[in-house]
Amino acid sequence: MISPLLALNDGHRMPQLGFGLWQVPGPVTADVTATALRLGYRLIDGAAAYRNEEGQGAGLRDSTLPRDQIFVTTKIWNSDQGFDATLRAAEASLARLGLDHVDLLLIHWPCPSRDLYPDTWHALIRLREEGRARSIGVSNFNEGHLQRIIGETGVVPVVNQIEINPRLQQPALRAFHAAHGIVTQSWTPLGQGRSFDAPPVLAAAARTGRSPAQIILRWHIQIGAAVIPRSTREAGLRENLNLFDFSLTDAEMAAIATLDEASRCGPDPAVFEMQ
Image 1 (tube, one colour):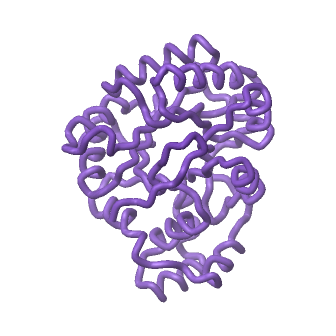
Image 2 (spheres, rainbow, N blue to C red; image 1 turned 90 degrees about the horizontal axis):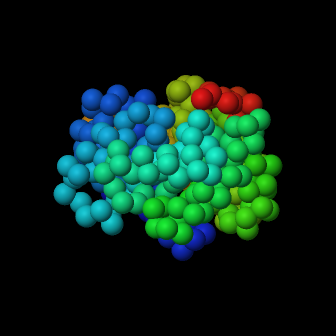
């Protein structure tokens, strides 16, 4: 089934479920991307830092789908922040992808100690105005980072892609997003499997006949988040896509909510500065 679409605050729409390319090896990226599109994925989430944009672009070209039916995301890496550097980095990403524009361009991390993310946001606004990115957003931004770029430019990101999974649910940040019309997009949505054996997940899996991974991905869908799981196996891609013919009950959603431990798999955006 094709994913439902979420309305973005700039008038565009984005598939709620997509395919993430983080840690997909470069040599298989083209084939995996093309397979994902053949199976029904319509959002392909990449980044310069993943070092597989060439494969991402090749997979897009291998697909028989028209370009306007595929939602392509990439991201500006930390070492490319700053106004002019961001413009150059975006052009380099487009060249590697073989595209004249992306559907969504994100700042990958705020890197607050470098204090370049406001200038980087100004560059993304320029790229949107020039048509090089249809929509612009951020990744791993905290509320303070969001308040600053919105306050300085008046431009609200369409998306904030953050770590969300049953052990790290970030309800306060999600509430801020909702209040400002920002879509929450979940990365590491399965939390490295840390909740696969949690009783609420196993109980829902037993009732529905679905896998723990499907239960957790369906939980993301029902909290209103966009989600970008990854698999390099066709069976895994099919399983992750098969989320829209069942629902979790209110009681199951409430039980999964109790799993939140504010425990991260990835880095803390308040301090992460990797170049």
